[in-house]
Length: 94
Image 1 (cartoon, rainbow, N blue to C red):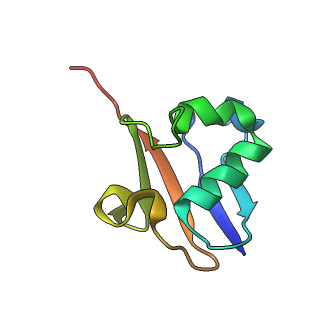
Image 2 (cartoon, helix red, strand yellow):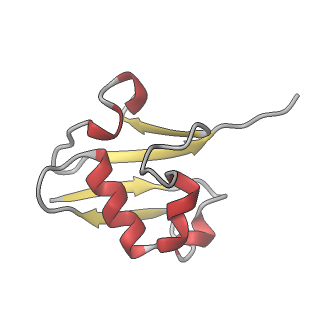
């Protein structure tokens, strides 16, 4: 199954400059399996998206459509063929 992941400008250098990455997942199609496949293809993204325990970093927001995955089942959110995830880091400042 294939899922698209849209990356913000700040993360693109860690994915070879790609704005959008198609990730093939086998097994249960969850956000966690997409992240595992994405991080396997682009290891530099690993520490920017997840912590040492594999949990989503606090400052990283991931959207499936209009829904933040934190409001769904977080990394266990099930995905369907053709879904697209949007990764948005939190922005701080004043």
